[in-house]
Image 1: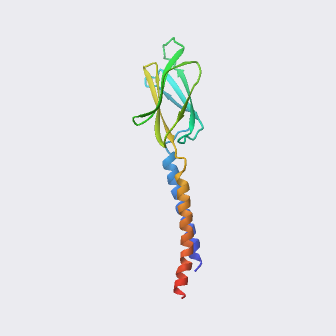
Image 2: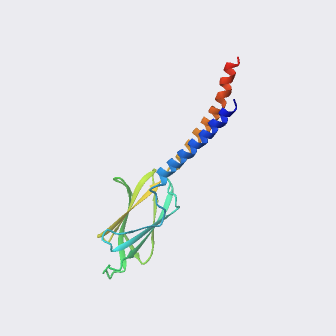
Image 3: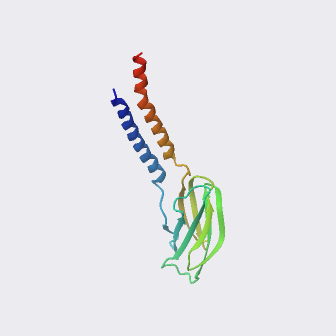
Length: 171
């Protein structure tokens, strides 16, 4: 008679654990943590992108650091690197800074993302080379919190249900 509430609670906890694992996997499976390092399409430069804070959420200012390293096969004698910094989602440009000049150091950009989702950070160097990084902006209110509330509520309802059924039959 009293086993049913415990069984319901155990089932609810197992469902919760599986659901959280699935949600976390879907949200964070493709997400990469900084620093991200890629070579440009012509292999003339290696670009390192990092940001703080590490978890990017909407409506919060994110500080991006861009470090551009010329490759060994780059025959350019110019120490000044000029690049464009573009952040966009689909066709919507969130931020665009053109003609950034860098001499052997890291440059910094601030970006505020308007919503959750995938965004592209594009670095166009000296009008010939480019590299694109994908970053994930996670929602401020994680979906795991919603699942937690639903599962706990379900466990409470299921644990009370046998008591109400027994009361109906005992009348």
